[in-house]
Length: 448
Ligand code: MG
Image (cartoon, rainbow, N blue to C red; front, side, top):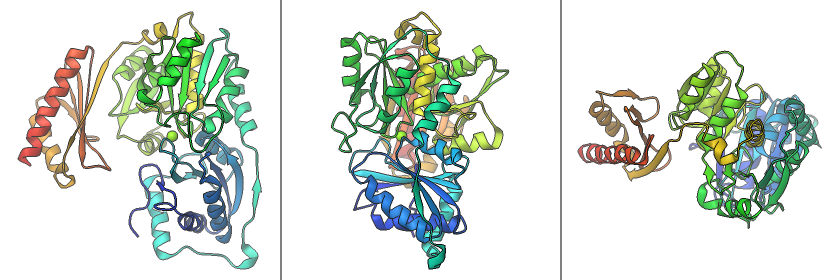
């Protein structure tokens, strides 16, 4: 069997790349992996294919001897929370996160609420290729329903004091499952909430699900026209958050992470911030303010969780706006991210745009260049030699530190391209670094 799991579980277009048969077999394989016993929490986002895949997956779990705890509609962080809260042996989330409506996906979670690491997914792939084990009729599992949302609400409200400023927030959950939690939670914490794209609709008519600036124009306009203090946007399963300030300007994911980290870790002795090689230097500024350190990993949530488990850390996050609070959940939680950002802002008298400027500003440029997969390793070696006079890191691609900023040249894991990220304190310097990166990348590809 070929590699089934991608970066975030199994994902594909429904009834083409991802079928009920796959869901059934994945359920059986997970049951086999768990020793044909135990209980598995199952949640799903509100895609039109969700119920169908859920039924197939639960049939698979039951035929493999596992009980299923049906959570129904839930954001991904709620599934992670519930897996631990209900002491399940594993969790399964049926979601395709930020992908369009025709996609769906299946992702497995450990009993501690963290997504399966790559080695565990490989184990599932091996079970699938051997053929999963089914149990005799008397050992078939059963399924029951459970309500996770009220417990998740209560747990957050126990941790977070009520806000004082009565900030007006526009919440855009893109007709997806974030609507089940974020608007109500922010209201109960003391915000005035205006909901946008708040009806659950698995065709996602309001906007595209990925929280990138081109999809958030509606939110930005609404924030300005409602004279709101800020806007909050989630992706399809609410494990990411992007913020819009009162002028309608987007605050990027790494800055959201930085503000949240500064607030969440204040008062902590020498805190450790985990992030990837692709995130802004503003995290180093935050670490300096806190007297702590930044540890950089490869790109991706599993890398961050792997590092958290191995060497520990106080917070972890990526540039896409997904933050992990390890003393809360071992899963990116966009809802908690929004709550903590607002808590930080609520502590000040500032407008959101002014608050954003309390951390240094950096300019980022992101480009890409085609490169055949078989050349990627050679190109990287060449680039490492070319920049050997600088401080470099080869953790994931090649990151080069300059006086004015940094450059990341990184081959994509899924497409035949190299990505070129540059960051500096001015736009001109960032462009200069990006131009240099593209020039050297072109030369290295030509010579390889
Ligand atoms: Mg997501």
